[in-house]
Structure formats: structure tokens, C-alpha cells
Image (cartoon, rainbow, N blue to C red; front, side, top):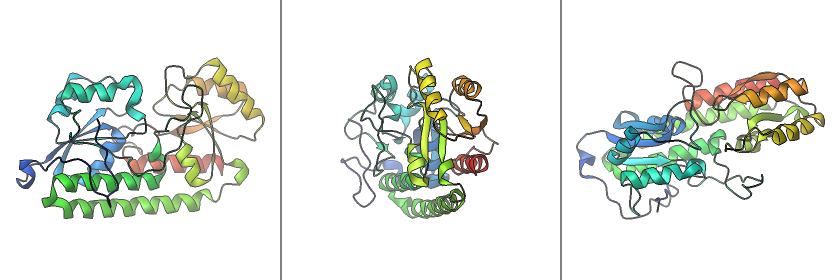
Length: 303
């Protein structure tokens, strides 16, 4: 059973003990399931952690095929962080990886960074009632991820708990400033124009946080995404709304949204980050950077 990280005020479940090297000064070997968690944990762990991300930048963490290196890194890891909320559930790839790497026991050091987040739920056929995994697109949830990372790192490496606390506090303050700015900026967009149309319906958390309504071709990345029926359904919705811009995400095939743009006459105004950071050196190469890029693109296109 995958071990769940509870709220920081409740501590950590299970009886797993800090490893013997905790006071030795050696870096923690950490694995995260995808690049966004990599960056959040990097900010909290700082120089105390050495991190391997399973799904690389630009890839889809919903359905990832681990490499032999991923198995080795996970087997050697002192700590494994995953998102949860069904993100890593595609083909059960993450559960299979944990079993193969010997990290599937009840007391294995495997922690869910979304613990404490209030979930949004899916409504499309075949997914009804399932949790929507994209909680990080609400900055407040990113703050919770950072708190959870701090709790886990401090639990297994108590000698450096003060460092993790200071790093998390500084990072959360940065995220709080980003959230406050987003609220102020999005207030400039008239309510009638706050309709965010993307390929995947990944922006429920964002929309709830910042007063938007979500439109999309498919609700969650899966094998049956971008079907003609899904495209036709969105085109019908667009005819009933005053929509001035469409958006496509960096981690999906743009052809479905390009078809919607051709059929509707509405331009694709920009690219948004959802399931992955951008490449190194680009504006979206960090969690703060990808959210800032998203916010600026949406504001410029819909204001």
C-alpha cells in the first residue's frame, strides 16, 4: 500500500524510521514522478537533496513507461514523491514501478504531495467521480505541496529540519505573492470573457481559484482523446459563447485544437503549461515560471 503523507499538523503515518545516514551530511536520494514535483521538492530540499524525475520534461505523466534507469533510481531512493489524485494511474505504471523497485511495502518511504488538497472531480463518461489530478494549477495547492515536502524531508532528516523549514517558508512566500498578483490581474478580465478553452480539461483547479469557467475538447489525457465527437461537442459550446481565444498545452498534440480553430474561426492565442515544466532556459522551466507564463498568456489574450 502506498504510504500517504498527511497534513504537517498530523505528522507522518507508519513506523518508518530516519535512515542511518541522516546525520552524515550525505544528500538525500529523491525520486519524483514528474518535473513539476521535481522543482517544488528542489526548492524545499535545496542542496540537501539529489533528485531524479521519472517522467522527463515535455512528457505525459498520466501514462509513462519507466526506463531501467528509473527502476534503479527508485530502488536506491531514500524518498519517493508522487502527485496522487489519479495522475500516475494510467496503466498502473507507478504502482508497477514501486513493486519492481521494492518500494511498495506499507512502510516504504513513498509520499503523496497532494495530501490535504481539496479535490476537484471528473464528470466525463468513464471517469465520473474520479479525482482530477491537476491540483498544482491552483497556486495555493502548490503551497500545500511545499508544506508536505517539508514535512517528509524533516521527518527523515531531522538534523536539517530547520533548513527545510526556512526553504519552504521562502518558497511559499514567493508562491503567495504570485497568487495575490494573479487575483489582481485577472480582476481586469470581464466576467463574460473568463471562459478558458484548452485541449485537456486540466484547468478546473485554476478556474475555481481565479473565477474562470473551463471549456475543453477532452476532460483528461487518455487513449480516447481528441475524438471527432469531442471536437464537435466543443464546437457546439463555442457557438453559444463569446469566445475570443483558444489555448493549447505544451504536453499534448496540438492538432485537435488546430482543427477547432479552423472550424470555429477562433485563433489559438497561446500555449499553456499543464503536466510538465518547459525546457531549461525557457520561461516555463520552473513551477513559478510556468505559472507566471500561463497567467501572462491568459491575461494578454482575454483582457
